[in-house]
Each structure stands twice: as C-alpha cells, then as structure tokens.
Amino acid sequence: MHADAQAMIATIEQIFAALGDNDRVRLDELLCEDFHAFENGVQVTGRELLDLMSRLHAQGRRYQWAVNSPQAESLSSTLGS
Figure: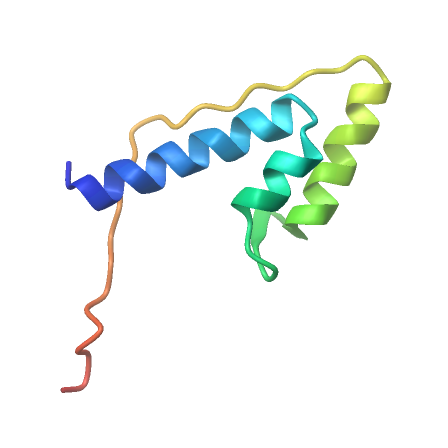
C-alpha cells in the first residue's frame, strides 16, 4: 500500500481513537472545519459526531472502530489537462 494511503489510514485510526476516548481536543486537532462523516447512513459533522459519542460516554457506552480492508483511491490534480 502506498505511503500516502497508509498515512490516511493512520489518521482515520487516530480519529477513531479520539472519538472512543471522548477526546474533544485531539479530535479538533485532527479534523478540518468542514469535515463530515456518515454514521449509520446519516451525514454528521465532526462536532455532531463527537457530541453523539459524548452523550453515549455519559451513558456508560463505549464504541471502538477499526479500519478493515482499506481501499484508497485518488484523482489526479491534472484532470482535464
């Protein structure tokens, strides 16, 4: 796997860890302002996702995500050239 793909996977794993640890400071360091994800088919911002996880943490619930069978694709910046 290409080094860039490995770096992206490592970042995703860090995001998952920050969410699992309810670490708002770390998540803010990792996510850009317009980040969004899909959780159970619903589009959420990074803030909304962390707020959801914080509520679940307060209820004593914990989640752990993992990157399984990653596939990384990219488009060339020279499209249309």
